[in-house]
Figure 1 (cartoon, helix red, strand yellow):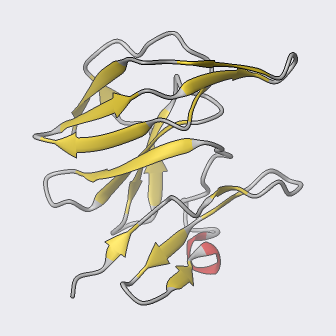
Figure 2 (figure 1 turned 30 degrees about the vertical axis):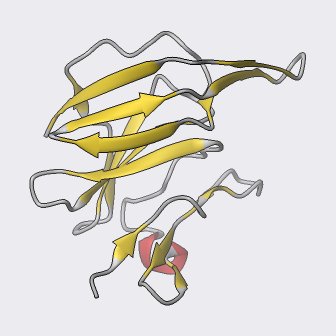
Length: 138
C-alpha cells in the first residue's frame, strides 16, 4: 500500500502566532508532521477552507489553493519540506477568498470547481457555480 498525502485535516489552527497544521495519512492513521516540518523552511501560511492537490513530474508536490487568500497558490515539496509559490501560466481570478471548492489534478493542470466567497465583515457568503483551470509551470 502506498502512502497518501492529504491536507484536508490541516490548515489554520487559530493559534497566536498564526500557524497551520500539516498531517500525513499513511493508510492507517493520521501522523502529525508539525514537529518534523517546523524550522525546516516549510512554515505553512495560515489557510482555512482551502483545497489541495498532488502534482509535479514525480507526484511529490502538494499544491495548496484557495482559502483565506485565493490569489496565492503554494506548493509544498514533500522531499525537502520547502514551501514556495509556483509559477502559474494562467490568470488567477480576482477573488479575495474562494473557500470550500473542489479540485482535481489531471494532465499537469488543476481544475477547481464551485466554492464560495465569504465576507467576514458582513458574514455573507456568495456561492459560485463555475470552474477555473490552473496551469502550473513545474
